[in-house]
Image (cartoon, rainbow, N blue to C red):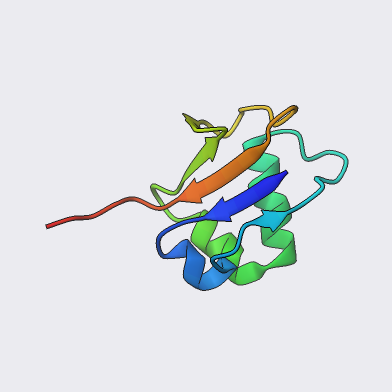
Length: 82
C-alpha cells in the first residue's frame, strides 16, 4: 500500500511516497492514524490537527473507512488561499 502526505505534512513525513504493509489490526483510517502516530510522534500531532483529511484511492473518506483492498492512502491538510 502506498502512503502519501501533502501540504505541510510533507515537511514532517517527507515528499516521497511510502510503501507499507499494514500490521494486523490496522483496518480503518482511524487505526492507520494511530499506528503512524506510534511510529512518529511529530507526525501523530500533525495528523490529528483539525481538518486533516484522508483520501483513499482518490475519494475523501471518514475515520471508519475500511482499508482492505486500498492501493493508495493520502493525507491532506486544509487548503488556505488568499
